[in-house]
Image (cartoon, rainbow, N blue to C red; front, side, top):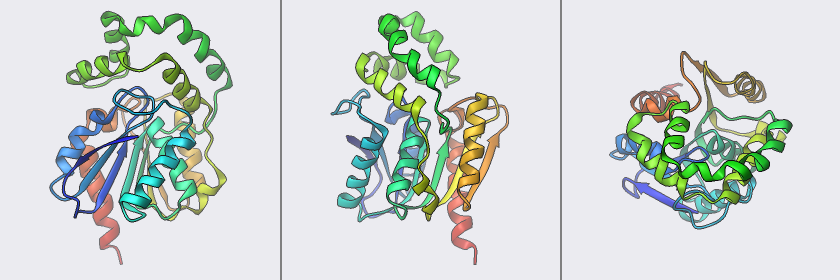
Length: 252
C-alpha cells in the first residue's frame, strides 16, 4: 500500500481512505485545507491506480493500515475517515484496534450484504470491462456518481488503470461486507454520515451501525447522493470535521 502525505510530521495525524474505483485525489481538497494544522495521510488502497499490490480483502487492507499506524505513527492517529469501501476498511480497523483513533468519520458504509449483486459482479464485469476505457461510457458512469466535473480526468485516467481482477475483487468485497461484533468495543467518537438520496440499503446500513455503536452520531445529509459529501463538498466536510474535534476537546 502506498501513502500520499500532506503537512508536517510533527502535527497530529488525520487519515482518509478513498472509495472503490477512486484514489487519494478524492480527498485532496480536504488534505490541502487541513495540512497547515495537521499531517494528513491519504492511502492508495490495494488494487487501485498507483497502488503496489493487488486487492485481496477488506480485512487485508485494514491489517496493512494498522501495521503502518503501529510502525510509523506510534500506534494511533487523531482521526480516521473513509468513504464507501474506504469506510468499510475504517470499520474493520476499528474492529481490530479499538484505540487506533480518537475520532472517526464513516461515510456511506454498506454493512448489509447483497448476495444477488455480489453473484452478478464477476459475469457482468467479465463481459463489460472493456467499456471502462471508452471515454463516452466513462462520462456517463462519472455523471451517475454525482461527482464534481473537474475530477473527471483523474477519474477516467485511474479507472482505466484498474485491472479487471482487482475491480471484481473490491466490488465483491464491498457488496459482501458485514460489520464485526468486535466493533462495539471501539473507543472512538464516530460520525456516521449518509446521503438522503442514497439507496435504501445504504440508509439502513447507517442506522444499523448507529444502533451498534453507543458513542456514535448519525447524520443524513439532505439532498446528497452516495459520496457527494466528501467528494463534492470538501469545505463543508473539513468544517464539520474540525467542529467534531473541537467540540469534543472543549467538552468537560
